[in-house]
Image (tube, rainbow over all chains, first blue to last red; front, side, top):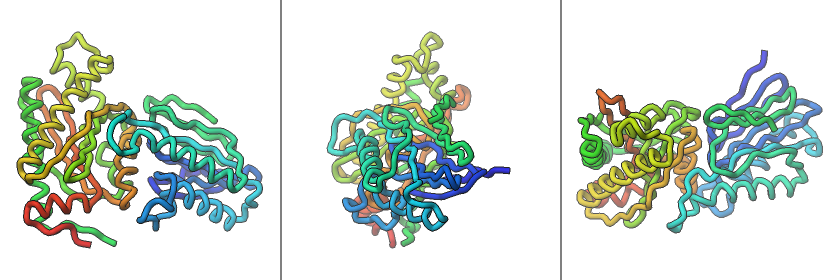
Length: 162
Length: 203
């Protein structure tokens, strides 16, 4: 029997086949799945912000695109995954509210998160196999280690498998 | 680090929520010509993952209308109703002829939220003598978790927790249930508590 491992906000976890891994209700945050199809091992990190170096309170590494992805790679390596076999699928980074005024970057944080996740993965030479990012809706994601498919579920239950 | 509210701070914030949401609920009550009841606000410090469960779980679909508050204090006010509540709210306001998820229905709820948030902020200003300005509210229908990610990200720049004053209103006979949530990063409330002559939040 397979279990489904849940990952919260600014949180991370890993699993092996036949288990699945999920995070619920991604808005402007990003769910980044890093996986190795050979060993059927996967990890998911749910990051909230793009850059840990710009934030004073950055102890929680899983909160940021840069440190969160680094940490997940280390974790997968500690499970015997070869870094060169890691691939990625990412989802989230939506613009939930269309604020246009004010000094806050609420309207733009989703895009910044997408860019930061892409850049960090690129710096590790990890290929993004598929993504469902941006636009204006929330997403729940479930990654199946058996098939390496990522199901992206919108409110109203439409599913996009990437 | 474990922040906690002193009893005095807890009581003060509960009372602010009572008056703020009370006035807001009265405005709504007049608009929809229905008697509304409000339960006493819940004041608590939440970590981001427990915040989602308040609105029926992270994947419950809700309508949220969000306004950011600036000025002497930075915070957010989120007005939240479930799908059925949104439908009943539009019905109470505009009659049976209008689909709630039409442009007109959604903008009607946005306008209700605008008035509610305006009256909440005005009460806070009167009570504290602070100057606050609030943004034009923006609405969104989606998963509770996705909607709450927006304030969480904003407060997440400073900490991993949020302080929430959550007031729930009910219109019994018309089956309308909703939440008025004032929230911020914990220490944003210090200025407000100081204005009331109460110490900030312990660390």
